[in-house]
Image (cartoon, rainbow, N blue to C red):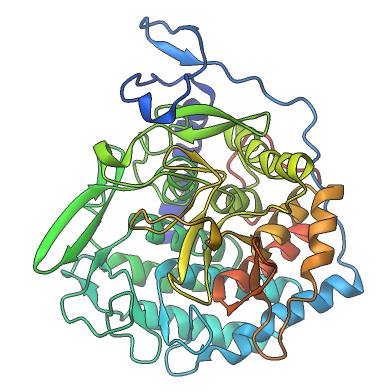
Length: 452
């Protein structure tokens, strides 16, 4: 049987498994809740006598209708595409994560490929441009050196394809792999298989080199960090991110049965009058920080059309931000973002590490001065909900453009300064959001989706 045929056969089996997972009530763990300083909402027990969460699903979520783009929206898409015209490396076919910085992660590369697909679907680039760029990128991904001969390294030089650290310094050994980043890359891989089947052999060539035996363990996702000669293998992914990337893995037949359970580590915290879903695993005990923010929920909506739980969870994450503005007058659109100054990357959260509206680095440092109003979050939420609040945010964001590098990442909340960094992720998500506005999600798992 052909590779494509095998994938199609696996998808039908996985769809059944996902249906059972997403509609069932999953056993809840009741340990280590004190750091949340709140109670998990519990209404009863399941058949095994264990507590299950109460989730009241919102009856009328204001989902945006799909429609043709206006002339101004098409112009906006073309502006976002200029980033990829001017930060693309013809030697490798990959785009830089940040303008002027020849570096990428698999997450960034996924944003570029989805931006490329969006630009093609919106007809702002020619067929020849699309196919030449897609071919070059996939050919490079088939040749990149792998960490320990297993899986893609966390970062690469976009001109040489050599492994690097996060400061773009060459690394012969590599720095490990991220299951979350690899899962994001599998999103465009799935879109390619579905919509551009002529590239299926290239996708097969890429992933046939990879050894997933240490990344998927008993239905969970694991990543590796290698530093100072020491390797650590850790469970990877927290609420929102974990379920989002699991969908792309499931479509290619991998066992993500534990990673995809929305309710196994979920609690609810009241923020601005909204009961927001949060991950109850503490960093002290489980070794990873927890961030409840916009990014994975926006991407889940744009790319998969949400499922039964993420449809509700996404709206709550969004609504808390709208309510913060109503309650305080502070414009709010928070997500992970690059910064134009130290520490250069932060997770701006609705709830993080036990605190509402925490701004955190990956090392756990915190400062409110890093909080920004995110351009990509605004475009994402506006295409998904199209409320009066998202329209107001969008009007304030449309001027954050450059001549050659698309949109800036946003503005600082405390003083209104422009966060003058141009990134692959910002402009890729803008293209995705505008493509979604017209066509809907790239892929759809099941359950509640947005209006046609």
